[in-house]
Image (cartoon, rainbow, N blue to C red; front, top):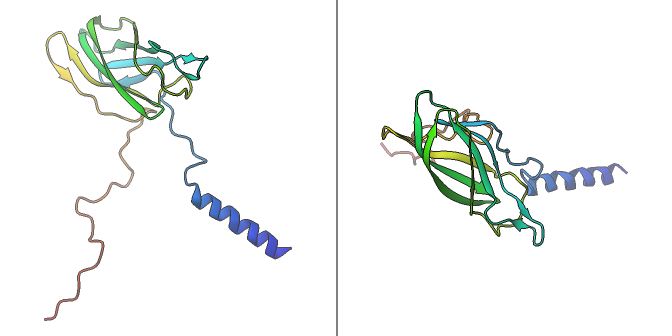
Length: 166
């Protein structure tokens, strides 16, 4: 009986090693999400139920300019859904805090993976006065993506140097 339990424990341990990360889902984008001078309030797609894909023209991004006394004229978003990345630029004159809702004809036909993209962020925002901002990406939950223990600038060599004959 003890040997059977040891064998079962070993099998479970091997299964856990063979499937790393299978128990941990990818982070989900949290909203509202401040992405530089833009706050994204939602980012969704709709399902085409006839074939379980994303419906055409269903990528919807709701956002607003969060910079006081400013007008945005161009916002480029990066969206990743079901491991498919797209970039879309929205142009116009968008005043401070004015709610903006736009649908884009992107991602149609991609296999359905739920209503929320993995990532929805601003890559570039241009203001009416001409200045441009390229916000840093802080991860889908808005926390900083910098590792707690970053790699050293010059990592140690993979193999120690051979002893010198002096």
